[in-house]
Length: 136
Image (tube, rainbow, N blue to C red; front, top):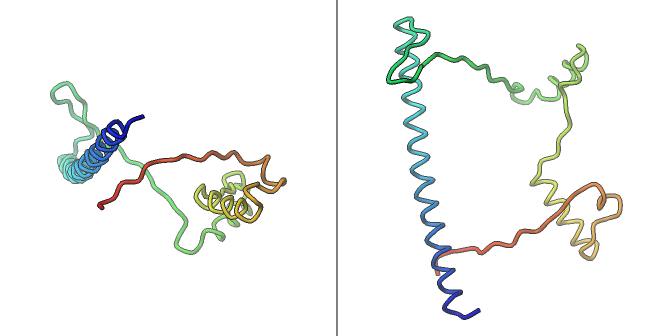
C-alpha cells in the first residue's frame, strides 16, 4: 500500500472522528432539550389533569417509572435483607468488564502472555487494534 493511500485513510479517519465529536455534542444538546421539554410537558399535563392527548397523529401520555438503587453504602445490607426475606434470587454476582480485562492483562504480563490454566477456559478474550489520533 502506498503512502498516499495511508495518508488518505488517516485524513478520512481524522475527519470521521471530528464529525463524531461534533455529532456527540449535538446529541448531548438535543438530549438536554428533550429532558427539559419532557419535564415541562409532564408538569403542564399534570396541572391540566390530562393523562393523554392526541396531536398531529401522535398520542402523548404520562408514563411513570420507578428507579431504585441501594442506599449509599448499604448495598451489602440490602443483599442480606433480600436473602433473609426469601428474595435471594434477585441478588446476582457480577464482575465489571473493565476490571476483568485489567486483571487478565496483569495475568498475561505475569505469565509470559499466557493466561493461567484455571482462567484460560472460563474467559473469552480478543484484542482490538485501533488508530489513535491526537494533535501533533
